Image (cartoon, rainbow, N blue to C red; front, top):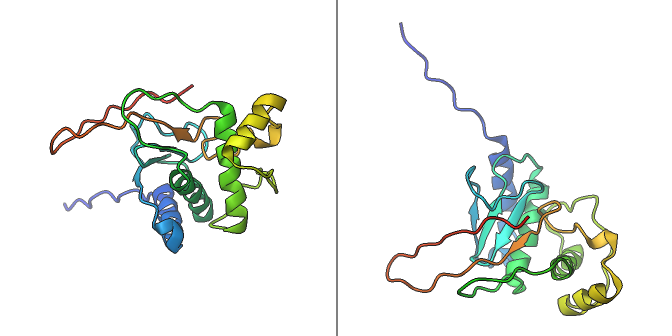
Length: 186
C-alpha cells in the first residue's frame, strides 16, 4: 500500500505578499530603499490589525497570514519604504523614545501625500483623498496645538497601532550581533 504524501497547503497570503513585493520592486525608486521583511508567525512586532510595521533597524514586519490583494500589499510596502527613505525611522543605539501620535500621524500624512502623486499599488479606500500642506514637523506641531483631525488618525499600515517603531540599534560587536526586540507598543 503506497501512501501519498500530504499536499502542502497553499499559502495564499504569502503569494499575495510576494506579488505585492514584486510590484514594489518594479518601481526603481522604491527598489533602491533597502529593507528586509519578517513574516514570522512568532514575531512580536507584527501588527494585530492592518498589514505591517516598519522598524528603525530596516525591518518591515508583515502579518504572516493576513490575506490582502497584491496591490494593497504593494501600497503598504511602499508606505513603509517611504518611512524608511524619508528618515522617519533613524537608527540609533540605546533605548528609544517612541514618536507620539502627532508625529506618527504627520509622518503618515506626508508619506500618503507623496503616494498620491507617485502611486504604487492600491491605497486603502478609507484614507483621505487629500492631505494638508507642510512637512512632518509643521503638521505635528499644528495638530498638537489644535488637535489631530479624525481623518488622519489611522493613515498608517497597522490599523489602530503605530506603523513605525524605533528600536535600539545594536553597536558593532564583532562578526555577530544580537538583537533583542521590545514588545510592541500598546
